[in-house]
Image 1 (cartoon, rainbow, N blue to C red):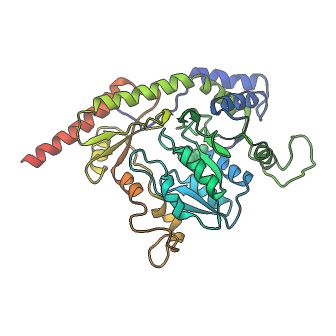
Image 2 (image 1 turned 60 degrees about the vertical axis):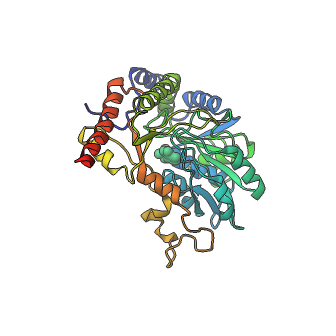
Image 3 (image 1 turned 45 degrees about the vertical axis):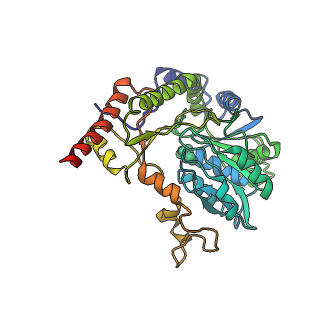
Length: 384
Ligand SMILES: *Cc1c(COP(=O)(O)O)cnc(C)c1O
């Protein structure tokens, strides 16, 4: 039985929704985008929101809109999709990596105090795997050091921290509608904000430095970061299935939890109580041995597609430039021994299990049986 890591939840209802855009003959941003924008804002609970071509560019736009520029430093988690840090690079600023906690792999705000310099302009918590960063601590931290907060909520549409919607808590929150996110428009992104000034800045930046199309007077320098109504149509039919997608993802997470609870060698990671709406982006598992490579290889032999966890950013080949001749990162005393221990540990021991709305019970069972058989065989090997 083949079990892919992920499949987008698209069906005939999405196809029908697309047809509407063709029927009314409006394919660039128009009525569907307006409606989809309203629906997303309702989910995030913000007054304003603006589309971007994808999540990476949503992060870039948000950084520009809050005023981060060349020479600034932005604190980002050491454990996230690379785009979080690359968006910082894109505005010419420097990403400064912060380790994560060991229980649900979210940015550890307590270690960020040591990372502050006079150049620090913003902090960019990324809500990973359906859990949420401690936004109470983030907001206190940002207030103390007068920083802007940009939430990378690409994986966190509908996720809540203590009753507050992720992506709607900081100065700006960024979403992605890539194929493997909770809902998809193929490619797509969104910046949510409650700040009218940020919203206005976003409008100029995304639409050639003017507020409306159809005029050739451009008060500011801007670019084209728009989406299309074709994508928004898909977004609307996806959001109509939001409840169904979320229910399936939660059910799959629960099934994995139940079926693997007696396997002492692995842990299916559970949300802490403060994550009041948990929407598993993937089902994440850690092994108790030193590395998850063995169990992942065994899964692949059984036609299951596991994924590793994120590779720690401080070890990324593309961030080699931050390594000093002494082998330290940012060699100004900010990092001590073991500064990235939790992200290194997470990478070594983590596995993202297949999880998608259309996944069958049989597929979940097959994955769990395969994991069990791996550890059962290992025990036999140890005993002989
Ligand atoms: C997917 C993702 C992004 C980037 O979104 P794209 O739409 O692929 O550009 C950024 N951050 C995180 C945490 C993501 O999961």
